[in-house]
Image (cartoon, rainbow, N blue to C red; front, side, top):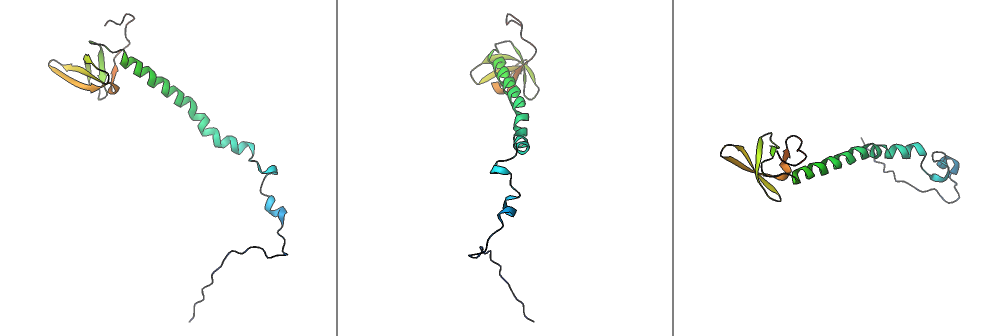
Length: 123
């Protein structure tokens, strides 16, 4: 019993043999430019995401402003859900009193003010 192995290699058309150009161009549109709906559909996800990204950046900026306005005595909530009062604040951290005699140091990015601040800033 013998097995035959055939290796097929791509070949180019021989000289003098013409390729039917109408068949090659039948699948492409005139001028080779992509059609309108497919171009629009490729950008549709991006166009849908733009408003969400814009609103997210506005919210992030507002939260950063609120953290910057924190002062001693302000009520805050730590990212873990613990409520406390700001005792001391530095550029990147804040010391928060969570119980009598218990003070923890937290990153400013992990705390948020509780409630709306009053007009004069006093609590």
